[in-house]
Image (cartoon, rainbow, N blue to C red):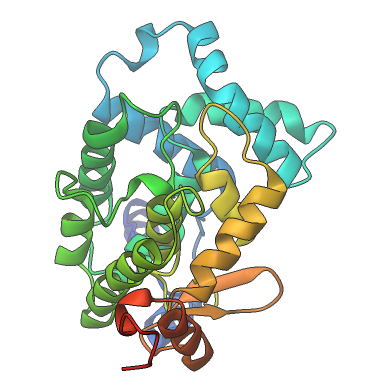
Amino acid sequence: MPRHDNVTQRLLALVVSVRDGSTDAYQQIHRLNPYNIDFSDPMTKRDRHRLLLHRIFSNRRVIPAPDIENLITPHFQEYLRLKEISGSEMTSQRERFAECWPFSPQLLDLLDDQVLMAAQAQETRDLIRLLVETFKCAGDIVPVLTAADFRIDNDQSAAPTLLNAVASELHRRIQEKALRNLENVLATNSPGDVPHAAEIISALWLRSFNTERLAGALYSDLQLDITRSAPIDDNFFAVEIQRIKDTSFNIHDQGPGRIVFRDEENPDARLLAHARNDKLFQTDQRDL
């Protein structure tokens, strides 16, 4: 009888997937000394992204590697510069950029680690739908797809709609306010002063999707998001991002060089945005 019990114990395995390691259920399971497999490991995520691309593109492997290298080089070189990547890490990062093309690795990580975690998404299936819709709208236009291609101002793009379908009420409100902020930025500034406004605000909206401490974006993230076939001048970008901040009313500073979209208004930005909007003044310059 003891021999039979031992055999049974060796053959019986309980497989449990736990998303949140801080729950009571997780602690109960750990009382039995389980064998842990961490699916957040960087190599596991990399394999998952490879599988995603294989499922999305049936002909992904037939595209010549030199063609991919030529397309990703401007964006990748700016990534190295803006993120101060050097040494042996450069080779591994170039390999990852090539593997993730036509998407940037930062976009895939953002969707995986922040956006879908903050939404009631069905993970892989919803991620594939978002990537497919983004590629359909911009894949033939830009060399590398980034967060800036989740355009909130493009009626032809289904990606924001798909994202809103699984988003919370808070995130849906933030998208509506981001769109109103974009309208005010475009109404207040001349097009030549804010040529990347729609891309920057769209990228910031996507990067603000998580309500936790990771929400928002560094200036370097946004500059990289809008880098296409050529680098963006640092000084020009600094001026443009300041114009966007000054004429938006839901963008908040969140630490040095980091901004975020929030549901509540920034009173200082609201005052500046109104002061710069000629539509709010009569022709004789008197305040309405």
